[in-house]
Amino acid sequence: MAKKAGKNLYWLNLSGGEPTDREDLTQIITEFIDHCPNLQILNFTTNGLNYENLETVLDFISKSNISTVAINISIDGPPQTHNLIRGTKDGFEMAIKAYKLILKYPKFKSSVAMTLFPNNFKLIGQTIEAIQEHVPNFSSKKLHLNFPHNSDHYYGNAAISYDQRIDLDYIKPFMKKGNSLFSLSQFVEKIYQKKLFTFLKTKSIPMSCAAIKSNIYISEKGDVYPCTIWDKKLGSLRDHEFQLDKIINSPLAVQTLEEIRLKKCPNCWTPCEAFPSIITNLKSI
Image: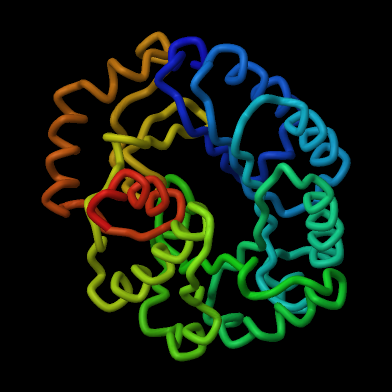
């Protein structure tokens, strides 16, 4: 797949499950580095439970020539809440240990990713305080807030509804505040959070979606979807000799792209889809 992507791949997001559960993760990354000369951005989110492999992967990436590396750590609340949501006894402790490891690499951009659920959205402040006990200079500027979405092929939670169960008034104080100087990544994060409120009110994507045009989701089985949310399978790489262009240029993909333009898709605002859309639409923002 890396060979077929070649010069056309600029941004590689490795998703899961948990990426570091793959003992061959460094080999996978190597394939894309070797065959995709224009690869500029690599990112993934980790829960920190596989610390040894994470350490190996981070050390390997730090020696690569990828210009932008973003590694996020998932923390969904203060210790007891995080461990309950994650179903782990020492999940919070391991996440903090992993976050400290990531911070040792100044080349990397890093944030704490907190997904908001009915049982943790009131605990954002307590989560920040719990992290500060271990990382004293941590602040809300390093906290990335996710709103839960539904997807059968990615999350397996299509039957769950989160509507009207999260009070936005609890979230607003922790949203990114405007300032005169910030990096492109901070700007994208700020726009993401600002547009999140628009999305939650209208249930409509607040800008032109970049799915298929600029980004695509490929499952661990090689199945290709417009994004992580829409359960509309466009094809399988295994059936097309791993040539992605054959799938995204197919009549089905062209039809799907038009449906996306008309907002006849599920409409979402997840970071995986929102960030590429923001970058694609920078000139109009």
